[in-house]
Image (cartoon, rainbow, N blue to C red; front, side, top):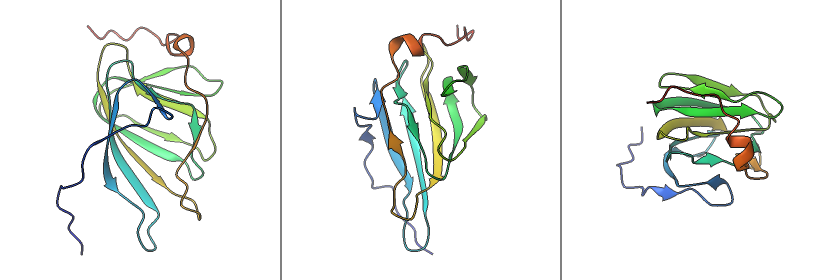
Length: 138
């Protein structure tokens, strides 16, 4: 058994991977035979990931707020606390907060044999993001 005390700093999400202000808290990192990578990701209103893919897929679990998710070629879906989303291996997608609400999710995945968690693409444009359905957030 290994206990890690909460001493890891919250890190801002890299601008290459995110639009807007995003903060990441590490939950689990690959170590030894384990390939599990998990993070608590905090999105400010309107913040979102760039388009990206995961070699072994990804599960996100919404903890608080209202978020948006989209896979390439699909419609934008609204996600709320308790919702789980699984992105298939290699599925191009993005996720983030709604325009007027914060959103925090737990992101969980297995890295590949080389330790890669994701491959990143273009930023989600404002036009793509604004195609989201009305959410009744008020």
